[in-house]
Length: 89
Image (cartoon, rainbow, N blue to C red; front, top):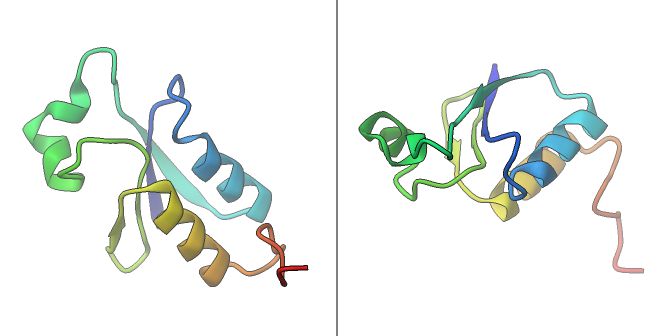
């Protein structure tokens, strides 16, 4: 199962949430409490050493830790519907 590490109040994870929703990808969400600095905890640092959200764990256990990587992976893994376009035109 795909796991999204998210903070509902943070702006940066919105892109990942929107892509997952628009593509209809089943996933679980783990909320990271930025207000209480949970992203700086040793437990979260093992998930994402950059201490940022979003982070996404793929079905095979790979960890993606920035929006560009998450977006590229989701578009490649789930090409329908194409949300980034299919050509530069």
